Each structure stands twice: as structure tokens, then as C-alpha cells.
Image (cartoon, rainbow, N blue to C red; front, top):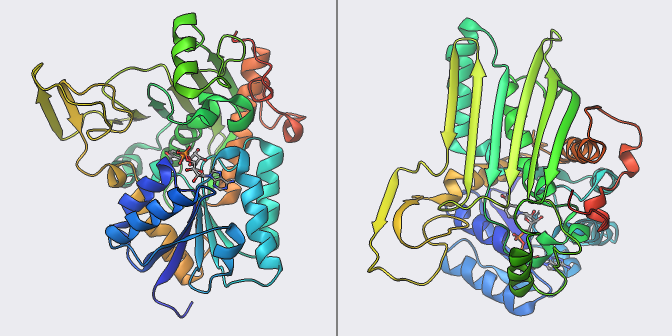
Amino acid sequence: MTESTLGIGFIGSGFVTQFHLQAWRGVRDADVLGVYSPNTEHAEATAAKARELRLGDARPFRSIEEMIAAPEIDCVWLCGPNHLRVQNMQAICDAIQLGKGKLIGIACEKPLARNVREAQRMVHLVEQSGLLHGYLEDQIFAPVVTRGREIMWSRAAALTGRPYLARAAKEHSGPHSPWFWQGELQGGGVLNDMMCHSIEVGRFMLTKPGAPRSSIRPREVSAQIASLKWSRPEYAEILKKNMGTDVDYKTKPSEDFARATINYVDEENKPLIVEVTTSWSYVGPGLRLTLEVLGPEYSLSMNSLDSGLKLFLSREVKGVAGEDLVEKQNAEQGLMPVMGNEAAEYGYEAQDRYFVQCFLDGRQPEENFYDGLEITELLMTAYMSAEQGRTIKFKPAGLDTYVPLVAQGLWNGR
Ligand SMILES: NC(=O)c1ccc[n+]([C@@H]2O[C@H](COP(=O)([O-])OP(=O)(O)OC[C@H]3O[C@@H](n4cnc5c(N)ncnc54)[C@H](O)[C@@H]3O)[C@@H](O)[C@H]2O)c1
């Protein structure tokens, strides 16, 4: 690349795009110049937000094709809903095939796709297009995670041996848009939505810095899913009222709890374990991310709700409901955790900076579509294990065409 500043276009103007815009205040060498959303008003509002934050002279686009063809757009951040992922990617590739624009890179939100077949399609399309590609997994860029990993490996593991157990969790009280709750659209329930983060951060912590992903290998997966809260009649009613009649958890639930254990082996075939749990049935102050890593003479732990700032609001402070203190906030009173800079602390800022730098240098990011594909394979193996009630060797036969019952709308909640 000869240019020193990249032009970025966002596909999607929803919740996650707003996080990326907040993060972009800490990103150098890239201006936000475009936003596409099928809802023109949303695209305009998000482009206006980017301009207001002085992130670049962003303008709304009426189609993906038009945005890809725009000469100022060098890279795309793919942030649409899961069920439109492949369609969005196809639209990008079709525009490139027609010789439109000068795109060099694409960064795709998690999960890469709803199942293995679709994830393979994403990989195929990106390979065919010749674009550089990144898989957006913010947690492995969170400053506490990268700093913790660096110190743990350089100081403790170097002297006493590698870490062998990582436990990770992501939990909150449930997602904000109806499509997340619909198994067929989202690709599953909370397992597909959030376990992708925990699996990857666990794998990341147990991988020696500088060593390839293949240095530790998944061998088997055991998992369990359940609908603990949202299929209860009173909560199914609340959900339908808030999310619309297409979200009916009395007849068609998705799991709101999932756990999995992934057994890996290291370079010497020694056992390593990644233990993950996730839920949409956790009611605390807000989104909670936890991580623990154990090694022979050390351990590391973090909890995102143990924030540096706690704000106490008495019963006289009767404000409206919001998410101004922490993502997926559940209260506006009492002792509440506050994040100083959420987008940075969750990892969005370092993540977006990293991908911009890679694209600017013409370098393939280390976290890319191949990683997204392997994570999808692990998630689908976890669903298989939960459905069959047994531990499954990785990779199982039939994985390529497997679609979880939850994603077919056929799961009965048990
Ligand atoms: N990294 C994270 O922690 C994290 C957090 C939230 C969401 N996500 C991921 O980001 C993606 C978007 O999630 P969200 O929370 O922003 O969802 P959302 O429901 O808030 O927004 C979805 C957006 O998709 C756009 N859209 C609708 N139809 C489209 C189409 N045909 N083509 C392109 N865009 C279309 C709209 O702009 C809409 O605002 C999902 O894949 C989700 O899994 C990641």
C-alpha cells in the first residue's frame, strides 16, 4: 500500500457498529467514509455520528455495490445480521468481480457464519476475491487479556511451564434485536451467539505468543444446552411483547444457557482444557465477561464488572432505563459498575487498530476467516454433543452439513 490513510465502509448500522465508531476514536490511519444499511435513515444517522465524532467524512450508501464501487472505500467492516452474512459477502464479491472499486480488505464480525457450510462459503468467497481478511473477535484484543497473556507467558510460563486450563464466560440478560432470539436467523441460541468469544479467548490464552494456532489442537468436545429462563411462560410472554410475535419461546425456544469443555493437546501431546460457559439468563448489573487461566505455579483472573469505577445511586435517583453505565445494563440505582471506555476495554479499539494496520501494510491479519471457520466447527461440534448427550471427537463426520436443531426451529427446549 502506498496510501497512508484508509477509507473504511461499514455494512450495518446496528449495535455493534456503534461500538466500532466509539472505538474508532482510538484508531489511526483510517477514516470512516461510508455506511450501508437497508434502512436509509439509519445509514444517514450512523454516517452523521461518524462525522460528529470526527472519524471521517462519512456518507450513507444505498447499496453494498455502490459502496464497494466508491473510489474512497478501501476496506469494509461487515457488521450485518448473521442470516445475511453470506448474502452480504456475495454482494461484495460480485461487485469486485465486475471490476468495481479498489477494495483491499474485509473484516467480518463474529460469528463468521451460522454453520460450517456457510463458514466454508465465506472462506471460499474471500479466497476467490483475493482480499485480505480479518475475523473480528474483540476479546482477544482487550488490553487486560493481551497484557495478562504477555506477562503470564513471559514471566510465569517461561520459568514453571505452560498454562493448562482456561475458563471463560460471557453472560448477560439477553440480546437487543429480535433476530438474535430466532434460531433459524441467528444460527442457534446463546451458544452460537456468545460462546464463540469464550472459545477463542480460551484458545488464545493457552497458545504461546508467536506460536501458530495449530500448536495446540482440539481433540474432543462435550457440551450441554438448556432453556432456563426465557421459555418459562411468564418470560416467554415478556419476550414476545418486547421482540414481536415471531419470537415465541413457548413453541420455539433457543437455548439461553450453554457450557462446553474442549480438550486440546499441546505440542507434546499433553492435555489442555478450555472450559466455557455462556448465558442470556444472567441478571447482574450488566454484561459480565470472566476469564481465568491456571498454570503449574500461577493463575490469572478477570471480571469485567470489577470495573475501576463504581457509582452509587440512591433510591431518590429515579432515572430512565439506559445503557450509559455498562453494556446490557440491568439497573439504574444502587452500586453500579461503570466502564471508563467500554469500546477500548472490551478490545474493539485495539482490534480495529490492528486490522487497519494489517490492511495498510498489505499484510494478512493473524486472526482471519480461517480462524472464524475453526471456531464455527467447534461451536457446531458443541451443539452435536449437547444434542447427543456425549463427548464428541473433533472433527466429527457430518460436520460440514450439520445444522443444529435450534437453528432449524426444531429444538424442544430439553
Ligand atoms: N463483537 C461483539 O461482541 C458483538 C456484539 C454485538 C454484535 N456482534 C455481531 O455483529 C453483527 C451485527 O450485530 P448488531 O448487534 O449490530 O445487530 P443489530 O440488530 O443491532 O443491527 C443489525 C444491523 O444490520 C443491518 N442490516 C439489516 N439488514 C441488512 C442487510 N440486508 N445487509 C446488511 N446489513 C443489514 C442494519 O443496519 C441493522 O442495524 C452480528 O453478526 C453480531 O453477532 C458482535
